[in-house]
Image (cartoon, rainbow, N blue to C red; front, side, top):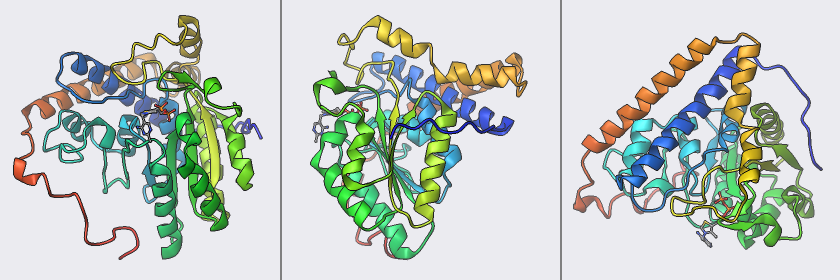
Length: 334
Ligand SMILES: Cc1ncc(C[n+]2csc(CCOP(=O)(O)OP(=O)(O)O)c2C)c(N)n1
């Protein structure tokens, strides 16, 4: 059923952390858009701007030992998990110092150190992989879980239905999160399905399923925390439909003419960076000046990441066949 999570009070550190994560992702990606225009970044590039409250809430509701997987709109997830702006920017430039050694680009960010399992270009392809990572945790008897993100378009993929069935049967410790930004490329949700409340798809598998406001870090945190507790207690998966909006086009080549300015304007009035800033100021968690200084530090970090990427070498041709296959199965062998 649709869920309005109970209000709980969050402390100063949590609000400042949310604000910092969201500000980093926003300013980093604004720079990406500029660099794409200058052809410094090439290939596919999908911006996350507008959806930042989801990764901010995810970070405070999970632990570093959990694993994370998503589709190609992955810059926000990587940065929130702590992959450095240098390593992400270098990857976008296709440089050897990138987090995927310059071989993945925007859609295939990856970091074993941060338990970030990508960055996947096949719509829905990451859903069984996320369940597999959760299976490995259960097999090894840990209390860790996998957070598996997808877009609304991925919910129509057969892989989701097969995965939901097995994940419920085996009560896997996984949180499936649909970031419903209203569109699959240029196609609205209403043009692809009769089930507009996507969370209801989980009920066919009796999976606990909820609809969450993705413009509020508080609601996202509460919903993921509750789902994480369920997973760690051995009660299996949860499906969260987190309603959000992307301010930019599907990718850099999409002018987004299929939606109205009013619709975009409405979501901008709910902007999570602005509302979080208001809460911080209202509760005197920081002053306006301190937030400006934080933003300035972030702008410098982003500028430094561009310099780092520009000054890094491209991968050597001989490295092409390295890091493609592994001969040890990474998740179930110790
Ligand atoms: C199996 C497959 N079919 C089609 C595509 C082409 N494609 C790339 S992105 C996309 C839209 C997916 O939208 P959604 O899952 O809602 O994610 P969002 O882009 O909104 O984050 C499609 C159809 C693909 N990459 N993979």
